[in-house]
Length: 226
Image 1 (cartoon, helix red, strand yellow):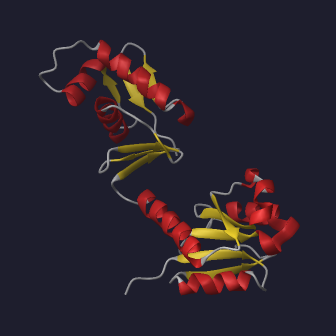
Image 2 (image 1 turned 180 degrees about the horizontal axis):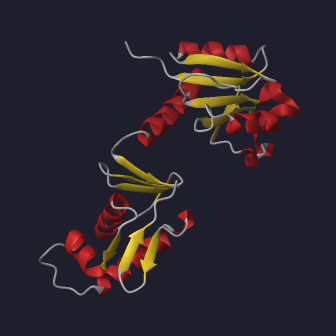
């Protein structure tokens, strides 16, 4: 039997937080309450897929609660989701680092859809088919590249060049080596095509920082970010 995914709720020990927990259990999630203010560490055990921050009851303490979640080793990689009354959503402080939000009152189907999307993202991040460096991810099965969750449109050769560099992060390759590994034996063009494709990749991934380093007199190297 598979274990139900865990979802943490940080709020107060009263409705509507307790009602939210009941709704999660109806959707076959393991709901675990973190009563605020909480002792440290906030969480023990396997990481939950999400931490729901119930703004309906936390009030002015929401900033401290969000910071505590981000500082907690067992929670820092979980999606941080605000549960906020619809009329207050326009005033939500996005600098608190929320990954998503759920407007209240919510329908059970809407809550289920949000959590399915979060679970899908979490499972995708853990997939061996995905290469990730910093905010950049590359899916070797779907040929998709994303930067902070936003799709990056690449040509096939740009994708193949990026894939080769990411698989061999830290190693320096000459233009001739990149041409051989990505374009193959029978390509008749010159090595300048490597420079053109590197320049395009840098432009399309510039928000991730300097990922492709020029090694003067040798070639290029992909820099893996934590």
